[in-house]
Image (cartoon, rainbow, N blue to C red):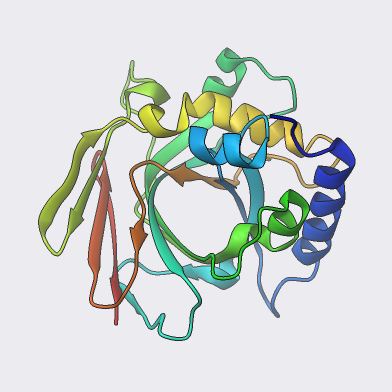
Length: 230
């Protein structure tokens, strides 16, 4: 499949960056989100890897928050792994360099609204990958000797097991490669992957299509985060 031309991706990123510099009043930088990084999404869009969007604390909500999505087009909840960087990650960094830059990890939930989404990569990027909200569990360093690839994710729906000890790599590939792809997309940006940034790495298990009444909890190690849908 022929992928989107580079100028289309760069045009979308420029439009997205304009939004990054026009955050909601009083909002501050939080970090980045990966999206459309599954094999199926990559094939459909013809991209080389996941796309990237920005995060600010304007859409950061506390664990346990309840959301009314009745006015959304197609609300989706994604269980994710979050990473806080302890050092910058530059385009072209090796897996070893990226691993060394990972400062803390934990559980995350993202809500997106893909109602009316097109298959145009520039439009997806300009829409900031349809981001609506992010919730984070406590972030902490990996245990001594552990690697990012060792992380597993548990997901409970209404208190019942939805996914247990799921390997994010089975859906997203190596998370170090996810971070590398994001850094590559941001190579021409003044706002790349920087120390202190929180990065949510994409839906690590099958996302939830929300209809109302859902109660979702996500766990990564000792980190847990939950959300409810009215």
